[in-house]
Amino acid sequence: MKKRKLKKNIRHTLTALLVLFLVGLGGGLAWSFSESIEQEEEYTAYSYTQNAEVDYRVQMKSGEFFEEELKEPGKAYLSELTESIMADLHYHFEGEEKAKISGTYAANATLEALTSGEEQREVWQKDFTLVDSREFSYAEKSFTLQEEIEIPFAEYRDIAEKIKDHTNYNPGKLNLNVEFDVEIEVETDSGSETKELNPSMIINMRGSTFVVEGNLAENNSSGVTATRIVKATDLKQARIGFAVSAALVGIVLVGFMTLTYPVKERVSPQERKVARLLQKHQERIVTLSSKPGVYMEQNVAVDTFEDLLKVADELQKPIFYYQVRGELETKHIFLVFEKNSSYKYRLTR
Image (cartoon, rainbow, N blue to C red; front, side):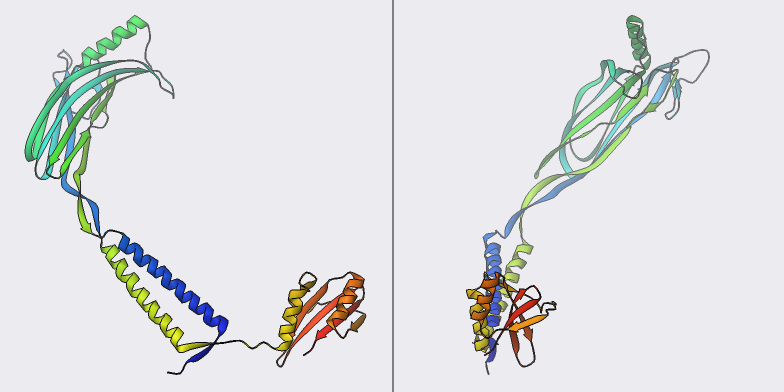
């Protein structure tokens, strides 16, 4: 096959680009083999859901006004006629298969007095234990816990009244906070995990009536995580990609070097002379991108560049250079300006 001629500088540039591309691909290929194709992956080995809900009924004091002793949830209640609140803690666990589940549950109440205003600050608080921490253990796929807990509303209200009488301080806000804590540990062959659910009640005890608020239900979905060794498919594909690309670029490079040969650009004597002048007198010559648009009353032509140098030395002026490219030749012009006159040297062969 006949070789094609390319200018030497163009051929060198294209060859350098192909070599750089090949080196980059080689580096990528080396990196892909330096990484292990077997990697650790985290996955969910055991999934489960759990929920904890608190239902309640309000126990009224027996009296002459109302015959109903138990009030259903979701209403407003008279504080003076309330004896207690019967809370029903209901917890349910559902796993994808049998597992060992152990844990504890407890219930605590806090009577909290706060200042009034936007920035409420705690003045005093008293803590009460409703249910001591109780343990449980199951080896099942699912199970349910249920506990009825009595909250002595009237007793806590009397305590708050005694503190008010003793301190002569009437709180801006008086809250009864009840927290139900369920903590479990799920153990499987793949590992274990600990989780908590914390439903709660908030009751404002300062007024003549109250409602039960708070986060009465909590649930979540979770799982026991583990690690396993997997094949890194992306890394395998990267190795193939780098290898194929490097091979293709290598073939292109060999073909390019085989099917082309460099041809040195021909430089005319005139251009060589200009290059020498520009290099020798680079500190004195200002190269212009186009012909200067300046009108001079007098234009003087000099025979040699040395004559123009003498003029520039005499006038202490810089030498300006520009090209005029034509179809047949390129004109190289050197100029020295002095007021309304110019001194010009045109380089000829």
